[in-house]
Image 1 (cartoon, rainbow, N blue to C red):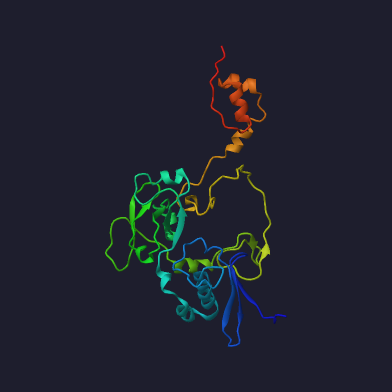
Image 2 (spheres, rainbow, N blue to C red; image 1 turned 60 degrees about the vertical axis):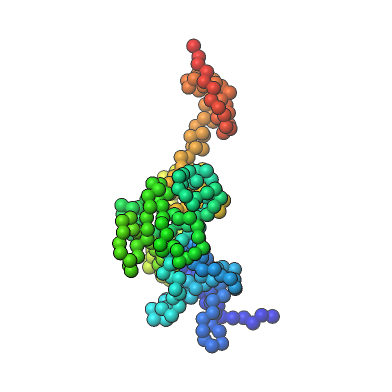
Length: 292
């Protein structure tokens, strides 16, 4: 029989948490580290030993957060890793012709290849560069990330990352580093719950939470494929600045279910067979049929 242990937990939200124990020497020892909200980033180093199910950098992140929250800034500085200053990257797969078309005429982007998307500073999301989505050809050489050339997915315009120790250049932009991602991680709000005051959770809400009641407002019809987030692996549509809004074709098609085929074919000048295929959500080539 396994000996029972006193288990502690530090939770940011229902899926962002870690569990730890205190060993015989009184030191904290993490036994479970959630990767939710962190695992989407490309690892900042190669985890050759692979001691845990999650990448080692996830455990490093939680050790830093625990030290910062429970021991103070001085103790947290000792847990800070050198890669905390690397720009945070996300690996994206070029899996569809639509994604590849965004990089037409640009070298380094081929079908089924990967690319890296740099994570931009939060302040940019409200500025004139709000729609930027910067990517660069994939490389495992982390030292090259800071000096790489990044291209905007929409315009193809080239950018470089701002560096405090180098002269400023045109089209430079600030990227958030892994350390910044980890700092923000502990302030993630839990919108599905309310705090002790009955108000929806915010960045600084603490204590025992309560379930938030759902109130139905305006109904917006959507379809399952309203966007392509995470479909077929890491997809470019999850990036900030990438146009993920798609029209709801099911809402339009639904209006055809109750239309009499001869009447609509006569009105639109389309053959009855084409209208029937369209009504049944099947692909068809329109055959124009003019009634005299």
